[in-house]
Length: 83
Image 1 (cartoon, helix red, strand yellow):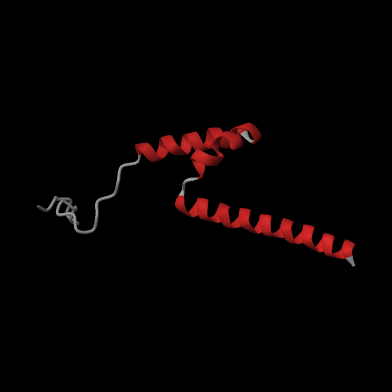
Image 2 (cartoon, rainbow, N blue to C red):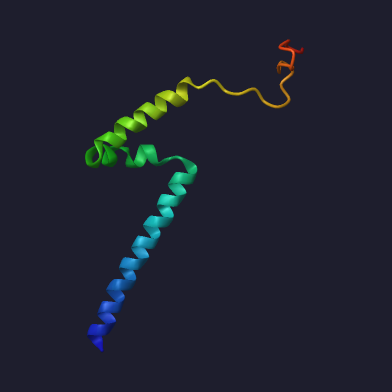
């Protein structure tokens, strides 16, 4: 009976740790803060992903923000600018 309890305890701890890591990964993806934490490990284990992430960051910095819906300088259909 003691051996069964030990096996159940080890499996339960392992499942708890894996569940915690899955929750943490989902939270990091939602908030977008994983670059600072997981960046060095990703660079070690998967260098191509590190290069891709660097390219995405450069692309995001170059993007021009779209005008908001209430922007008075929105273009009309005729090509003229209102405002």
